[in-house]
Amino acid sequence: MNTIEILGVPVSNITMDGAVEKVSEFMKSDGLHPVYTPNPEIVMLAKGNKAFLEVIKKADLVVPDGIGVVIASKLQKGERLPERVAGYDLVQNTMKRAVKEGYKYYFFGSKPGIAEEAAQKMRETYPGIQIVGTRDGYFKKEDEPAIIEDINASGANILLVALGAPKQEMWIEENKELLPNVRVAIGVGGSLDGMAGRVKRAPLAFQKLGLEWFYRLLQQPTRFKRMLVLPLFLKEVVFYRKS
Image 1 (cartoon, helix red, strand yellow):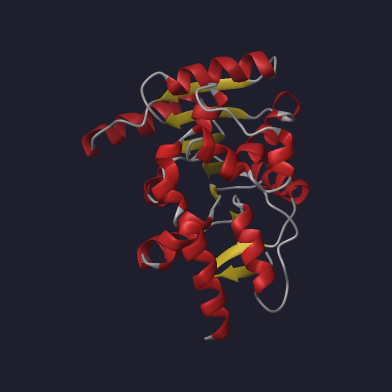
Image 2: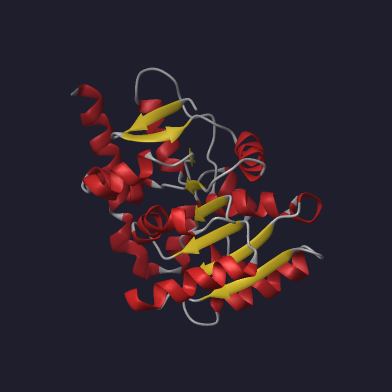
């Protein structure tokens, strides 16, 4: 797949429609296909963590979750990313096809109770959808064999992993050979909290203007320190372009 590097991180040069189609293709093929959704914060993490960067490079699809990643591509020479492909919206768009395509989801991660709440909300939103298992993200290393066994026993073919970066991506990479029924595993960060209704999505106007990050900051001022990565990220992109 054609990719555009952002600070050394390969990002798929693809639209939302293209990403949804690509997931559909993965579902009809063999093996597990990792899908990752980097925003500027994750790109910066990967830039400073070689092992994490290598995991991202092994993914079958890497979509630009944050508008900052799209802007960064426009500051570079060459091809530009066509649009933001938010991980949350990508998952929702797969769910619109779920009943017809026979997708079976397993929700893994977030705080206790969140995955179950998210599953119930999605069953209400998409009648007939198959969410065949849930598990919170609080576990020890010795719990992993039981978690993998539960995922396999559920018959899930799409796994949503909400452990936060880089843990979720590293977990998928470490365990992908142990999940023979799963065709697509997506690192979804805080998406289960959004599906459960615990975190509000920004109004559509904010989303269209690329200001969803600003809306989240208004709702959660404690995110201010995390948001400081945005100007640093863009500065790094400009410097990287000149290097």
